[in-house]
Structure formats: structure tokens, C-alpha cells
Image 1 (cartoon, one colour):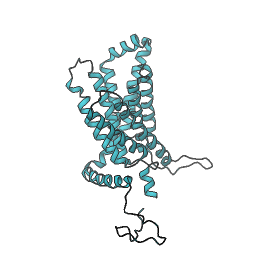
Image 2 (cartoon, one colour):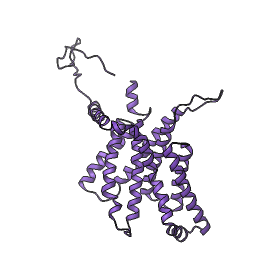
Image 3 (cartoon, helix red, strand yellow):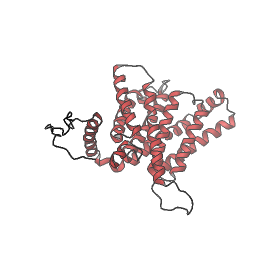
Image 4 (cartoon, helix red, strand yellow):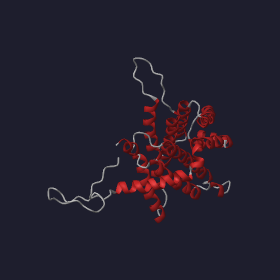
Length: 301
């Protein structure tokens, strides 16, 4: 909140009535300086992105589930290979392998569609989170650190879908304590934006180091911290969208690899997973960080 400026605020320091040193109120804190600069950039981004703002929620929801859509298509097109891996390497009985894959395909197709059309979001998000967990167990990837961090970020995006779909309800049952939709939205926004940044944490601690990787990692980590605490969250989320999108195109360019290249499937999987996290960040850009954030506290105080 703006404060009244004294006569010494513009470099003409008034003498202290007690004879002590004069406090220079013109000094600006680093946090306030960052806030002012990012506010200017946010205003510019708002102006530039004005035409697509109405479509951001739909784009975000689609990108969040695109990794599940791609995975369902992958299972169908590589059906025999998937069965062989589950049976020979994971030692799952034949009948259960078929059931496992069928349930995964159906759940991903149905729940992804519900997320896109914004229907029964609670069930859809719950179903997709269940898919993430069962696949981690079924394919034996639960102890793979990069897989674990990436999927935490995907879950964060799904929680952003959930918080975005909730509105405050007026219906309440007499005599029973109710956690209103607005309150639940606050908690899930906080959890969602915290989980979203884990993908970048995995990026920082994997791969070979170079001067550009160090610079991008430092900038990205600062943006991640800003997202978590909710300080200029829209600006920092936009910055992460740009960084992850450029990284995704340059590193996970699976379309340039030969059809039988051993890393093609891995690059494609990583590409669509990063798209899902980008979708979650776009929902954060659209809806804001919620009440548990520095941005919202500044509005109050």
C-alpha cells in the first residue's frame, strides 16, 4: 500500500527533530525493484497475449492431458511389444497384462476427454493420477528419479485442472462443517504450483553441464522459487513456459530421429510430458497463484 512521502523523500532530507542521523526513505529494497520491473513486463505480456487469453484455459487443459493421449496411442500401436515387456521383464501373468493395458487405455482416453470438455473433473483427475501410479508400479519405474520428478509435475498440472474447475458453491448442509470449493481451490492451487516445478528440478540434475545450461538452470530455479512462493507467479510461470518450450523443441525433437532409432520413443515421451507441465503453467498464468501467495498478500496489506 502506498505511503505518504515526507519532505525528505525526494532527496531533500528534513532535519531530524532529535538530532540523529537522517533516514533516506528514497532507498528502494531489491524486492520492490524486482516487483516494479516485472510489473512492467507483465503489463507488456498482458497486452501481447490479449487475443489468446480467452483460450488459455482450454489450451492448458489440452496440453496437460496430451501426454496421456499420446501414451494411449502408443500402447495401441505397440500392443505386442507392451505385452512382451510386461510378461517377460515384469513377470506379470498373461491375462493380467491384457487387463492392465486395456484399463490404462480406457482410463486415459475417457479421463482425458472429460478434462478437455471440463466435465466431472474430480473423477477425471483422480483417474489420471491413478494411471500415473499404476504405470509406475506396472512398468517398474517408481524408483527412477527423473520419472518420479516428471510425474510429480504432471500431477501438479492435474491439480491445477482441479482447482480451475471448482467454483464456490452456495449449497451447504445444516450443522455440518463444510470445506467450500473456494477454500479447496486455494489448497489445490498451492499444491499444484509446488508440484509443477519438480520437472525443472529433474532437468537441473540430469544431463551434461555447459555454460548455457548453468545460466538456464539458475534463471529457471529463480523462476521456480517465485512460482512456489507466489511472487510474481504469472511472470515466473510465463518465463518457465518459454524456457521449457525452447528446451523441449531443441532436445526432445523426436521427429528428426529415424523411426527405429533407440531413443525415439524416449524423446517422444519426454516431449509430451513437458507439454503437460507447460499446460499446467498456462493454467497458473491464467488463474493466478491463489490466496496462499505473496502476490495475494500484497493486495491485502
